[in-house]
Amino acid sequence: MSNTENFVKELADKYGRSRESLMPILQEIVDVQNYVNDEAMVNVARELDLSAAEVYGTASFYSFIETREMGEYIIRVCKTIVCDMKGKEAVLRAIEDTLKVKIGETTPDKKFTLLTTNCLGWCHKGPAMLINNEVFTELTPGKVVDIIESYMHK
Amino acid sequence: MKKTITMESNKLSRVDYIFRPETNRLDLLKRVMSKDKDDFLLELIDSGLKGRGGAGFLTGLKWKLAKEAAGDKKYVICNADEGEPGTFKDREILDRVAGKVLTGMALCGYIVGADEGYIYLRAEYRFLSPKLNKMMAGINEELKSIGLNFKLGIRYGSGAYVCGEETALIESMEGKRGEPRNKPPFPVTEGYLGKPTVVNNVETFVNTVIIAEIGYHEYKKLGTDSSRGMKLFSISGDCSKEGIFELELGMSLADFVDEFGDGDTKAVQVGGASGFCVPRKKFKETIIGFEGIPTGGSMKIFNSSRSMYNVLHNYLDFFQEESCGQCTPCRVGCQQLYKGIMAVKRRERPATYLDELVKLAETMRFASKCGLGQSVGNAFVSIVENFREEIVY
Image 1 (spheres, one colour):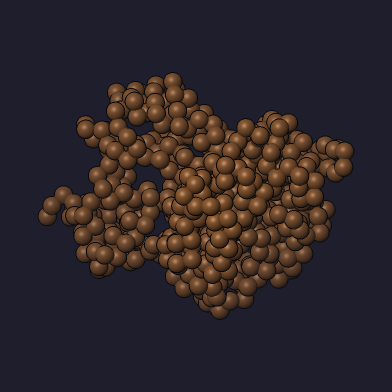
Image 2: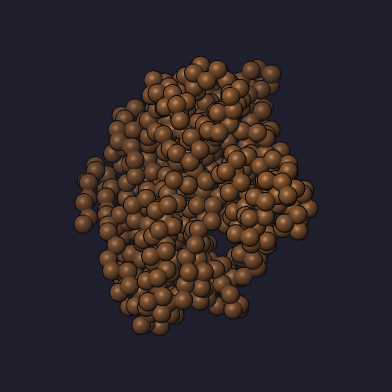
């Protein structure tokens, strides 16, 4: 058995094999490998006795379940109105300059992926962003560079 | 307890119920359990509490329907998929007084006869999960100790605004794409896994605990006839002070802006991207509550330096991304509105094209399957009607 096969089987043992186990399984795959690749989806389909299209259909619906390769740290900058008013553009430019990537791209060392996202629920402390599950608020271009640099050394 | 800030014309009442520390959970539950379930339901209905997520259905009636629904298995779901732009009060509740939310869920489980309850937590709030999981484990033991057969658990969203719609949320929990269902049947009769299910907002559950604590008589004294009780407001934008404020419902927008605006307020977006934009000239006549403009609590304040074109562009970008794509009026409508205002701005279309877009938005209001598509027209029409010149020039 391949690593993926084993991993998915363990997840199915843990969460169950009914349809309502699908989200928790996909979510844990994302937690561990940052995105759900084709091999993982095919294996999930087999374990849960679903068609691979059903699994892909569910996975691709959700913006936090990526089906293309992502970096180890996924940066999601809030682009909704209040963060926009408070300077998210300058924050984004600072991240792009630091990482030398554009929105949607992953650094060549596969460490960071830069994305934008819809309202994170920190409007009163915008601009805000997530790095994986960690929240950062009241960002400035200077502050965000410090944060990214601290992750570079992780 | 009640601090009234007197304004020229009206009043704005700051209250403090939601974040007050929880009283003894088990005493409260035992007290409710010693009484007749239907008596409690009548009190809850009589309190006038309406759902705090925005739609405003009578909470007591929802619980009554679920209690009366046939089925040996029932569920309670707490909707913590707070995705409306400008809303962040549920995060604060779950961060500061999650115990009250869980008590409210247990209360609901007892009344309707459910033995399982789940918080559906949006992915963006995953940082709360260690704390919530720990608290749930403790409360599950407590409930067992007083003989209440109810088990709490947690499920996560994965970044989809539409899953805040209760049937989309249920689809998501069932492992499917978060596409809203046709209603009826409503979740109170056929919800999660086809079983009767109560889906309530985070703040609503806290309100039910407050009603059980202070009694429906006291609760009814807060707010107005059609908007009972207090409400958390998430206030952001061009403000003198931002954050979460607990206010009585029924205030005028003029008083609100006096208190929270920066002195140069041009417009307030009430109820988030799916709500209404109110221009300065209508502040005095606008009441915040179910008799005027209802809100899930999102209040975004814009001053005269802001372009309302940018605001509308931002909202439409949001909607065309978050539309689930299932029904054509919403999927195509959101894209056409988004492309349409850009075309007018770039002079590729005449200004009168906005009138066509308003018609499209009105069509979406009644042709869309769920609240998402039905409410895109709220912001669109209110911004275009009040700030037409800013959209065109």
